[in-house]
Length: 472
Ligand code: ADP
Ligand code: MG
Image: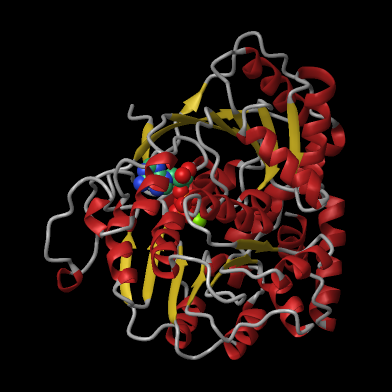
């Protein structure tokens, strides 16, 4: 059986692109960055970053941005978007000028802001350009003071940027170029009002770049407001011969057995650098505690409830290989680039099904081969099937190891699983009456009738939806 699927977002190399003929540059793209007529300082910095040749999105975007076009870049994480906009920005600003920022890069999360900042730092190493990262969760005073010293490139999350601007501590009148990175994610996270207010206060005459992994209607509308005659660059998963990620699913009955399986797997030294994804922050915390107590001390956890410093430190240690295992929720890691992850473990099957792609995209990046393992209990089979539909191929099932201790499913956990299954069946078939717990069902039916009558809006479906949103 073919156990590999293509992850289209890891396309480093000479892959075909879906750029319309009319937008194709005249000359053939050769290897190397010399073709872009960059200055010595940049070429040295690029070489030092270890980039030998541009990724497809870089090959297309860099000359267009240098030419002054507005750009709409559609490509998933791991395609090298950051350098695709940072390189031309550095080339355009060249050297430190007035105290006021010339370039503004907006991105949804602190982690992403820090990651972009790292890239800016690398690529400006041989220039005198000043950059600054602004994000919430820490005091604004130090950031404000840094702005006053003068800055050329700002990397920011929308909320903090607006706070500082509204406090009168940021002058944007000299802004020449603005980037919205991960635009779809920013919409998902409800940043539209902040982005609109930012657009109102920045100078009209400037170059705009928008990057997004997907193009839902909301992003299309934003594009229409934000970009003038944009050139569209698309690196689609289908058309990109991609990094191979080998993936499997284990059918595991319950939480304790999943923990045991993690324990067994981590005994294998091939599991050098492992991200374990959990569906909620509570789960992440529990998994972390179990692992730390019973299996492996070299483990950290990141989720939305963790303090800012703890998240940054955990990410840093994991990146530097000081820590072998990172337990995380999707929100905390979306877009984060960690190279050389050997294994992704989906401790829970993600119930936001597209997250599966993002999660397993953490491994096998930048030409390294990766393995993704998903643990699935009987209530999660439903989600597994939905994912298989999205990726258009079944995920191969792997036998549980013979020496795995399979625990009894505790009563409570079993009840919850049955409830979930009932809920799923009902969702698929509104006429399904439910097999689980006759009395409870009747009560629920009665409750539902009551709610329907009173339109209380606390039906189970909306409860589930709310939970899915809030808990991650
Ligand atoms: P995206 O923003 O599309 O998710 P990133 O900009 O985070 O992607 O890049 C993903 C990884 O690829 C990073 O580790 C980055 O250093 C690396 N990378 C970027 N450009 C190149 C290149 N031209 N050659 C090799 N590696 C690259
Ligand atoms: Mg990115």
